[in-house]
Structures are given as C-alpha cells and as structure tokens.
Amino acid sequence: MSASQSTIFLGSEIEQPKPEAAKFHILPVPFERTVSYGGGTALGPQAIIEASEQLETWDGKSNPSSLGIYTHPAVDCSGDPDAVIERIAEATRAILASGGMPVGIGGEHTVTWGIIKGYLDAGIKDFGVVQIDAHADLRHAYEGDIFSHASVMKRVVEAGLPLYQLGIRAYCEEEMAARKEYGVHHLDADVLVPNNIMSLELPEDFPKKVFFTIDIDGLDPTLFPSTGTPVPGGLGWYQTLGLFESVAKQRELIGFDLLEFAPIEGFHAYEFAASQLLYKFMGIVQRNLRA
Image 1 (cartoon, rainbow, N blue to C red):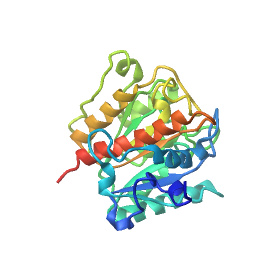
Image 2 (cartoon, rainbow, N blue to C red):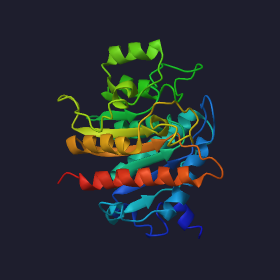
Image 3 (cartoon, rainbow, N blue to C red):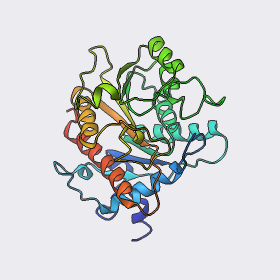
C-alpha cells in the first residue's frame, strides 16, 4: 500500500481527480472533543479511507466512482473548537464553490454543525436535514458545552432548518420538548425496527433539498459496536440503505456525512463495513441524481 493510496478513498482502484472533475468530495474530520462515553472517533476517518482500498468500484448496482471522488486532506482539528468549526465550514464552502457534493467523515457528531454552517455561510439555506441516530442530540448544551455532540441538532433547528429524525431511541425530556418547540419530524426506532420499515414519506412541506447526516450508532450495535455510545435496538443494514434511498428518491440530496465511527483494533470487518456503507450511499446518490 502506497502513501498516496492510504490517503485517497478507493485509492487502490482510482486516481485522485482534479477537484472540479469530482462529484463526491470526501472531507475527513478527525474531531473528537466532547465524546461522553467511549472514545476513538478521531481515528474513524483514516480507518474508513484505508478500508476503502478493499472495495470494488461496482457497488452491486452502479459505479459511483465514475462521477469522480476527490479526497481532501483531513481538517486540522487542533485548538479552539470555534476555530475547528470554522475550518470545517470553510472547507465545505470550498467544495460547494467547486460544484462538488460534500461527504463528511468523522469524528464526533459536532462535525455536522461545521458542515451545515458551511452551507449557510455560502448562502444555501433552503434545505432540510434528515438524521439517522440513536440519540436526538437536541440538548441546548451538554456539560455546559453548546458545541457538544449531544447538542448538534439543536444548533441545526435553531438555524431554522427543518429536521427529520430516524431511529432515535435515547433522549431526555429536554429533547422531547425541543422536538415539539421546533416541529421536528421523527420515526423512532421503536416504530421503525419492530415493523421493519424500509422507507418513509417526507411531509409535503419538507424542503426539496436535503442534507443527510448519519451517526453510525443509529445502526444496531450488532452491526457496529465500533462507536462510542452504542444503544441496542437500532436499524439494520438494508433498512438503513432503504431509508436513505427513499429520501433520495423524493428529494435532491445536496450532501451527507457518516460520523461517530470508532475503529476497534483487530476487527477490520467494522472498518470495511463503514467504508462500504459510505460508498453505497454514493451509489444511491448517483442513481437518483436530478437532471
């Protein structure tokens, strides 16, 4: 494995294109500051990139890499958290300016706010957010920190963006109140999982453009124990792909991220699965692109 391959998503199969020639822009963000249980999310982006060398370009239905995949250097996550969020936002703005689609990999869920801020700073405000997660992340602050991973969706709804939550199964009274206050749509795990619901119908008034954020703990820990805050009763593999695709069929996906993956040393199956999940999301986007 060469050094260049280990820093490029699917580097064993493709060459790094020019940024303007790529649809998908992988943005690694190894940010880990407010994790509240297990650690290791800072190691997630590199593990996913390295595991991608074992992927086939054909994802079973199409070849997402034919649209071009450009892998950015990892965002500098040192120093003040406000500065880190601004760096994430700046990198996102640059991707959008090039005509590419941001694909964030983290890193704790706070990363999503940096990406969303990039859209807002670029003047893109007419979109909604769909979230797969075990946790609602709607606390105003956690342990006094408004930029905690447990507060990231509160920052999103405060910015006026509609939110639809999927697979939630851990939340507090404050978060239930926030759902009501901000009109958050939701299909929680206790409905989705026992009924094996594979798709959803977004409300008519939900925005035509969607950013999709996936906390890997939204999937069941039998699939991904490799996360800091596992919660039993989560989504299955095909269920997750089905829900993602049902949104892609109804709305224009303008970007997505995959966060909170914390690799477990010696268990490369989880790293490969996370990498494959990310690539399958690209395939779904490719097959549902608007003309």
